[in-house]
Length: 369
Image (cartoon, rainbow, N blue to C red; front, side):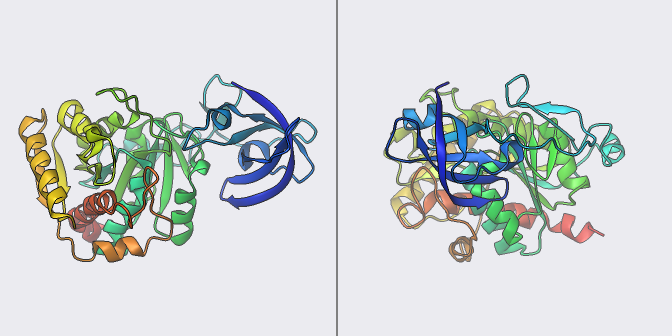
């Protein structure tokens, strides 16, 4: 951890739970970007001194490559009002927080979740990357504009939900009914201890018709078969299956990635769904604008299904309306630095998963009170 101190110059922008600041570090002339989580530190004012964790900034990382406000030494935020909740997240770190989990004994929803044991067929879309979330939602809305969708954010990437401008924008636009942060992730509309209780809360507390499970921003990859955080997509589908949900595996697909292992269907999807997944799942495909890439993806998908340990079912999703639905996204669509103009493939693949989930949710939608 590389510490720095500096002075706030201005607030550049803000969204729910976070404020991006312009800070001049001690001994430097050029300002840097720094992020403050407002529930943790409050909002530092211009002219105020701040202590920063500058490790990612100094290393020049992509996602998260900025400084983070650790403390305001001259202006400690006031204690929050006393309230229920004793579940600690970011446990045993200097920034651990005590929060009210939706499934704990002090929660008003505890009795509901103590009795809940089934998702009643609710479709659960698992995705490798956080950037798939708005595209999955676009696909859902293309089929069922009124569907209630919950996002279950796992802890494979960013831990604070407030790091995601996409989640803030999707909540504000009404595309997401709720964000549930599970495991060590925190800051959602509801906290949950496990993916299982996160999914059950999505269904029985939020009243969701569809749930989307994905890590927060900041996928971790090592260029090895098993060393990537998105392998947890298989674990999410295991939870969906044991709880009686409908598992939908969103493929990570690219036509613009220069790395051979990610071209077409990424090796991340081939490992997560072909090797790690042990329970049945639907595998949606949709026509791609590049005929050669479309043929490659379909060949890879057939190989994936043939060699998978679990029973995967290829599902063809019509492409009509998906491009228009993606164009209506209230938040920018970008993945690995590319947008739909340069590489539409990942967004179409994610939207296809959402469209299939929405179609599968029809009986659930009609059964809702």
